[in-house]
Image (tube, rainbow, N blue to C red):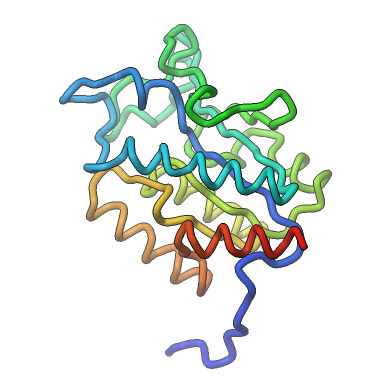
Length: 208
């Protein structure tokens, strides 16, 4: 049964933060046709579009938090992560694991959260940071839509944050997986999926 009592929410409720999920150097330096993690067509272009969201967040005094997946070179912290479709990735001794600082315009006062699992909340101090920043709404960009973005969204949702995924600025392993995850996140929070244009409008409005 549909929720007839669902309250319409603003795109940004209270104070926002922008989470830049796993936009790392490999996206821009690995041009292999076969990658250790599949990317949907247009993935790189979607990651580049995230720069607009980052610049607009800064202009609106919205904190920018970069999430970096990183694993020890001896593979000790992968757990079950290699049991599925993904091969070894994001090792701490590989240049592709670094954040895409140049492409994303990283600044010294941006925040960085390193993670060993898909969710940016699992085993990290992200929750402590968000509480310190008094954040209510999380804006998400990056990848993969069907893995790290989705898992981070779910944990944020279960921690009672308002979650907004900027659809133009996330990319999945496949188009079908990307679309399915967007639908699943929208199911959890009506209005969770938005365009870059509407997100920029909301960020600008929040600064006034």
